[in-house]
Image (cartoon, rainbow, N blue to C red):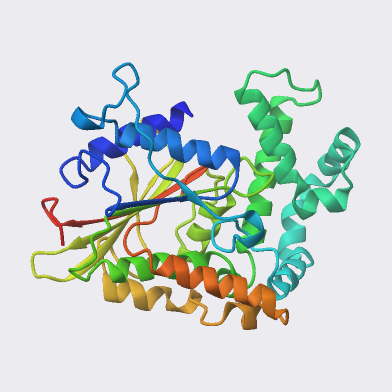
Amino acid sequence: MQQHYDLGTYLRQRYSGFLNDSYNRHEVYVRSTDFDRTLMSAQANLAALFPPADKEIWKPSLKWQPIPVHTTPLSQEQLLVLPYVNCPRFNELQQDTMASKEFKSLLEPYQDFIKNLSQETGYSVAALTGGKLWAVYDTLLCEDKHNFTLPNWVTPDVRTKLQKLSEFIFLSMFGLSNQVEKSKLQGGVLVKTILKNITDATTPSNLQKLIIYSAMKRFFQHDSTIGALQMALGVSDGNLPPYAACHFFELHQEENGQYSIEMFYRNDSLKEPYVLTLPGCASPCPLQKFTELVSPIIVQDWAAECGITNKNNEGVFTGLALMVGFLGLAVIIMGSFLCYFVIQKRRNYQNI
């Protein structure tokens, strides 16, 4: 919670003069996945982002004000919890990847290690290489962060190998082979929603400045949402996102009236976010060019491309996507991953 509170403090400083000092429901929208952790992360962040002042102070001894955090039941969540598991075509692509020479060659040097890990954890080798490696690494990392005593077999070498293997699993999940098609079925769905919000924000009548999404993958402390998004955009560094990592999207209006997008990634609280450059377009990237470059990962009929025949599943996904699209301006994803999209004019913070 402290990390997200600190992140909220940083955002208040970064966007001072752009965001109102006080919370304005017409400018800010916050949505979280329906996990206690992500809901709490969003609330901690907002406590620092919008501390009460003047008439907002309703209890002098408590420098906090309630700000709405919206959510949707996990059974209906089809945007923020990635990977989307109810996609038959994606599951086929995953099986193809795991059977590929590339994937097997990555795991080959670790075969003995995985067998030993199977004995220590009780997971089968197939379960570990199918994703449980990531879960084991996450669990041990979380226990270490909270000063729990780790099992004797968890040596520094074991932790290093677990991290490397977890990165392999992450890579194979969203890339390694068939990356464009995987992205269309996974991170590209989120890119499509963000891009629509960005485009909507160029209209003068749109008042929204900031949307916050607080998200994480079930059973994973590291967030797969930011991983899927960055793999889809071609800006992933291959590392697992740390706690309170943050991907920013900023829409700027240049002096000539044209719009451009800048992306930043904050994965270290001691350093300023570093610029992310969309392949094929220097930063800042003109909005039209950005739209053209991401078009290969934008799916028009997700259910059809996934091979879903159950109309109920299709209806839930399509309806939710349309509802989110009407939100308008800013998207923020929090939890292990915080994604901010903000509008501002170049050289100064003004309404567009």
